[in-house]
Length: 135
Image 1 (cartoon, one colour):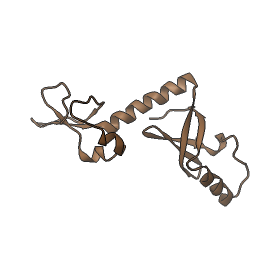
Image 2 (image 1 turned 30 degrees about the horizontal axis):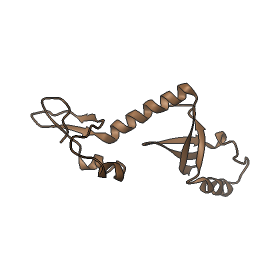
Image 3 (image 1 turned 90 degrees about the vertical axis):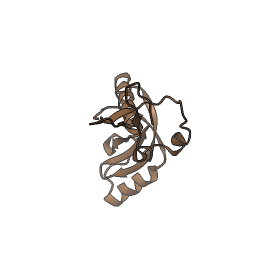
Image 4 (image 1 turned 60 degrees about the vertical axis):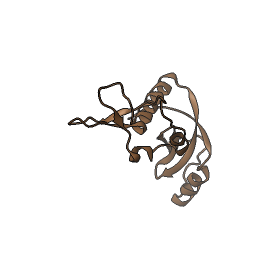
């Protein structure tokens, strides 16, 4: 149960907690203040359905917008790739880096060579500048 300062309490479902970092969940304790968003308002006298994961993502979108405005360069771990480029960790979100924006990416590679180049970058940390935010 979460006291949200309303006449009714709220609850964060197990399915939402499963989306969170295990260490974060382990350290949750009674009386702790956490950011939440209302996922569903009660239709009767029941409780609000809340989401910590959505609140974290909302905060991360705001951070992304601030980085876009400031032009600051930050470090992000490469998580994977798709046909067009790399996916990177951005707090609780995933960012995308198009292959054409990777400075040291060789050009004119075959599809297999391109995949090998992308695979070699998984778990590496890249210094990146946010150039677009699309929540």
